[in-house]
Image (cartoon, rainbow, N blue to C red; front, side, top):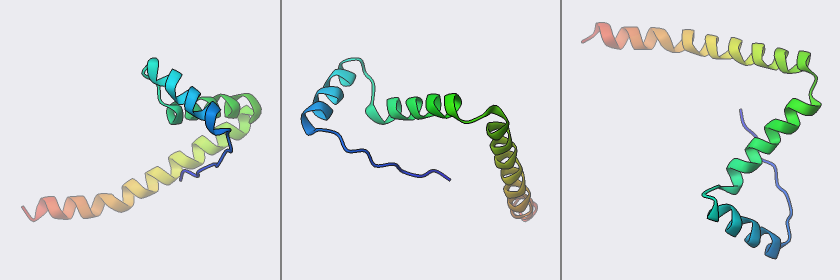
Length: 78
């Protein structure tokens, strides 16, 4: 699950930032996502990051198993 973060920025600074990013074919949202990942890597301890990754992988496996029977049923009906 993704969450949003609101940040207040001076309008003129934001316009200038978007303009100069645009000249380099970059998007502000993508750059902010990269920066938030860098902050995460820098400040969240590696054992906590590993735990979060394992938990996310476990959830995706559960979801895949839950969705799999519906897919196999629809394929067997064909």
